[in-house]
Each structure stands twice: as C-alpha cells, then as structure tokens.
Image 1 (cartoon, rainbow, N blue to C red):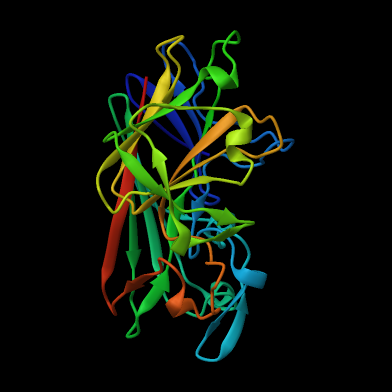
Image 2 (cartoon, rainbow, N blue to C red):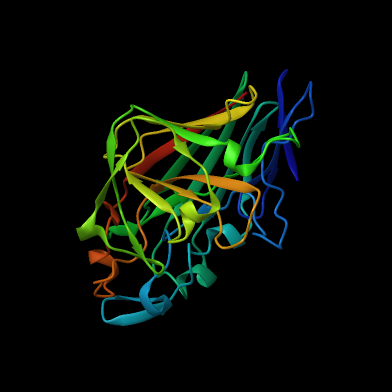
Length: 291
C-alpha cells in the first residue's frame, strides 16, 4: 500500500488497480472513503478502463473478431507500476501486454497521478496511444464515500447532493445495465437532490455535463463534513447499490457510457466512445475537496 500525506490528509493507494482505499483527516481521523465491506460492495474507488459500465452480452467486435470484456473493464484488477513518488504525490502506470490484448487488442498506456494540496486530492489521468491505429476506449472513476461520514446520529436520508452550476440537467436513463441515450430526461438540480435508497432503484443517476466544469457536493445540513468533486467529464454517475441499504454513495466522473440499448456490438460505434489518434495523448481528471 502506498501512502501520501500532508498537514491535513493521509491517503492510501493500492497499486492493484491504482485504487484509493482511504482518505483520512489527520486531526479528527475521520474516514471519508467507503471501506469495501463485501456485504454491500467490495471496492473503494476503482478506475474504469477500457470501458465504462457493461457491454451487451459482455462482448464487442473489432475488425470482425469478437472479444469478451466484463463490466467496467480490467484496469481495476491489474497491478499498476510505480512511476514516480513524492511525500504528497504518486504516479502509477499500467500498459498493454499479451494478457490485456486477449481482451482488448490495442496498445495503450494508462497513467494516474494523485496529488495532495491542502484539503484537496487531485486525480489526473493520461491515456497514451503508442500505435499507428486509432485507440477506442472509455475511462471512468468510481470513488465511494461514506454516508454518514462520521456522526453516527446522521442517517443516509439526512444527506444531499448539490450540483453547481445549478440548472436542469439531462439524465441518461438506464434500462437494466444499459444506457438509453436517445431518451434523456430532465433532472432539476436547481435545488439539492435529497438522498434516499430508492433514488437508485433503476441503478445510477447519470448526468450529462457536456464537458462543462461541474462541482458535485455530498454532505448534510446537520454538520460540516462532506466532499466536493469537480470535473469536466462529459458524464457523471451518482450511485449506491439498490435494494441494499448501503451506507455509501459514489460520485463518478465518466468519459464514456455503458452500451446503449441499441448497441451494434462494434466498439468503434459504441455510445460515447473516445477515439484517440495514433501516437496521441488523452488527458482528463477530477479533484475532490474533503471538509
């Protein structure tokens, strides 16, 4: 386990999946991250690559050949190499190999850098395409946050999600595990979205952000603790497993979506797929402020 820290926060990162497993306040010892209780969800903050969500029949086609790939891809289950490190930052890297090419026949390098600045953790992703062909991929983050954060007298329903800018967003409905991107529906977020477990009875609430800088705050009026996630991702998922009464919520910046209900199976025509030109680089990320 890798540790980075500063005056305010201590962060633990597992090289397996380059996954953040803990963010603690140094003064209060308050734990912000979901601790992966398998009764509810056995992960903390997986990185989603080279797909986000699920493929129809867990398969896709490239150049007439069919490949099998399970939900959210395989990066989260592979060891990342330590690339560089300082007391308050760490960079990890995962590159294609013979094993990855049995599931995803492309050359790539995925780098993630975590940097602590005061009360904020910045997460920077880089995808490199070292080949002569276009690289089709999706990328996502899936950090889970404890709800409640620390006060045992607070309940899940005491919490709310506040989005800035305040406006009516388009929400991508899910039909089972698949996106119905042609039937977006409005979601009024001019006021905070109050949490309840049945809010997730059709899986995640998926917001279309249109690459506009957006901040999503998770907290409660009952105390001063919470998190604020800022990103320019095109989509953001808000999720907690239903019908389980799980004591956490994920705020998920996505550069991609689950397969559309009308997906053809061709990876290059997948909904919201990124297409990285030969020998090019893709940069994205988000930051979380803990309070």
